Amino acid sequence: MEIYAKGMGFEQLNEAVRRCKEQEIVIRGCGGQRFIACAGEGRRIDVYGVAGNGAGAYMESGVLNIFGNAQDALADTMNGGEIYVFGRCGDAAGYAMRGGEVFVRGDAGYRVGVHMKEYGKHIPALIVGGRAGCFLGEYLAGGIIAVLDLQNTGAPLGEEAARGMHGGRIYVRGEAGVPLPDCVTAREADGEDMCLLLPYLEKFCAAFGGDAKKLAAEKFTLITPAPSNGVKRLYVSN
Image (cartoon, rainbow, N blue to C red; front, side, top):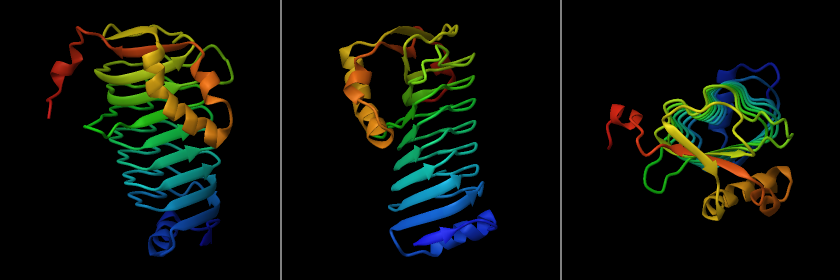
């Protein structure tokens, strides 16, 4: 099914998507309508244009392809499925993600991956092909974030990266390039570390182009919580 979204309000567009019985939906002429694929399950949705705030929020399964840019709060509290953004995304992408995978070809805005967490086999992943803004991985509790800086700017991260981080992993191609807080440690990723990242690089390259193995052979910095991390004491384990 194809939906031409120009001139439609976000409620009208999302109601049309909900009523559709088909497993594959194409949305053309998208102009910032919010909450596309919110709580979506099991379907493929291809969006041409700009996806508005909250695209893929609470998504359970399926695939969301955005052939353009995504605005703020992409994949907010996402539980499962895959999101591919062929442009860039705005602020607060992946906030409180609990599962699923997000791949962004270009840059990402501020506060990406804040409060991401994992449980058992549910390990969220957020891969950014360009740069990420300030406060990347703030209060990160679990999951995997990778910033590839494929344009080789030499400045992959903004200030205050990993502030309050107490779980999970942040991979940065090359050097972090910014001061990091005392609650984390940074070292060069070894072969075992890169084996964990490789499947995500393969998906990234399959969607956007590139050689995943060649990319994985480059130098990456791995940021993880420090052994003496005191931030974790502020949270209740469950």
